[in-house]
Image (tube, rainbow, N blue to C red; front, side, top):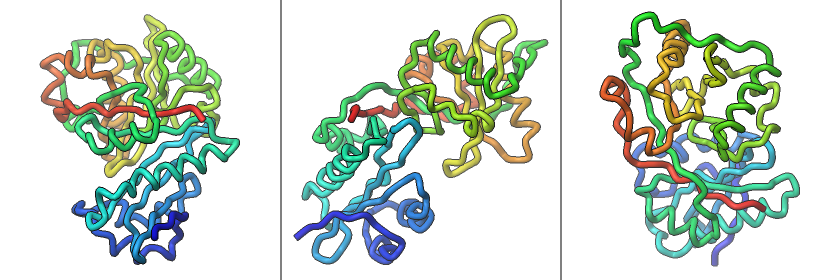
Length: 285
């Protein structure tokens, strides 16, 4: 007999007893911190007195939820547990009047995850490649000047909303690796205060930097046009920002596969090679 329930800190030993087959599994290792995060809920599917699968939903602004933290015990795989668990989480989201969209993000190479998402009725909506700039030491064109920094929440909000409108962007990189459907409600004052926003003085183009932590300290670059690698002033602003920081920040940016494949040779030694796109699945609820 199986049962699905929300997990608590008291379930930590059962989580530790799971055999996920993943070396240094962060979901297992960081379970106490994950369970205490008020923005997310973790669920478990229990069978034969053991946790056969765990997963959760991270609640983002404007009623958006991201499914994730999916782990299965290898002793109970191929029994439909992951699908059943995620179906329950989606059903709970549908019963929450504050939730409007639920999605999931997986890499193109992860075919098992895609099959599960297809079974759940989630539809692929977009894709992107996350580029990590491990060696931000390239030489810019002589005389390249950093873009001008925008101050004030209203000015930041206006710059971002205009950029989203101009580029007809459907998803907004609210956090590193966590894009969600764009809506102005995403741009709350507390969020905007964390962003460093820059504008090209010669055009309407803008770029924002947000510090995040996903296994390392990141300077997440938000830029919505396809000419990312042609903007010396943008990169001058990025390098100036990270050089002034007291943290060891790694620049990271989400781009289309087409933009990634057209990266100029001058940039290639700086970035970690990546040809495995992330796929965004989702459904309105």
